[in-house]
Amino acid sequence: GEEEAKRAFEARYGVRPCGFLLISPTKKCNLFCLGCYADSDRTEIKLSWSVLDRLITESKELWGARFAVISGGEPLLYEDQGHDLLDLVEKHSDCFFLMYTNGTLIEEKMARRMAEAGNIMPAISVEGLCETTERRRGRGVFDRILKAFEHLRQAKVFFGISLTITRDNVYEAFSDEVMDFYFNQQGAHFAWAFQYMPIGRAYTLELLPSPEQRLWMYRRSWQLVYEKHLFLVDFWNSGTATHGCISAGRSGGYLVVNWDGTVTPCVFVPYSPVNIYEIYSQGKNLNDV
Image 1: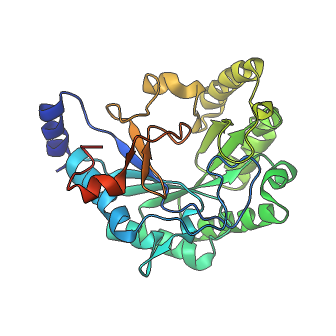
Image 2: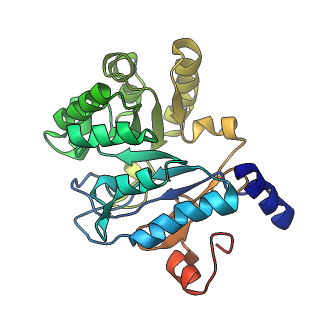
């Protein structure tokens, strides 16, 4: 079982293994958002099905890790050898998946498949309310997101939101109005907040939250947790809850495998010393990574 795998790893390496893998199976996306960290587009770059399947299998067998995070590109556009992302989720029914998605492809049928699988939780990207979200994601996207929420609610799928925080939307994103809209009116169960990082498409320092805004966010995010009892994680300011940075495969932390096989310490640190295809072609595995 997973405890045995963790103990075996610790006996061999002297530390606890990774807690999870973050995998971006494809770089392909149907949107073209301003400042996309992955610089996603209509590309066909993707992980092969066999590698994607092996990554989940190995993280389970070598690390006892039964949680995986899926990012992108848009994960629901992934397709290889007749398999899509939900095939992976269904095959590994003993694992739990958190998927970051733009939500535009969650039709009724997709929501039903997620419900039947029972082990995937979508986090849908928004920037605030309609105008702020569409300024970054494109016209008409907000209505499609609301439809996705509706389909997920009807199918009884547990879902949340993912916010990219910039200098321009910080006060709106953490406002009572936005929190009430998503948590109480739309039925979101959680919110991840990612402070904008200057990587990817047309990166700029102009969008970085200021030090004053970051301090305000720190106070505000914990206020929302303690007073409104919201499941809200600010991916920098909540670092105290995980004893600091969880990147680079630290005990209980994570690694990233991208669409082209590059392995990076963190989604927001896009520098790779190693490629999963190379590792596998040499007869090695995730522990060697």
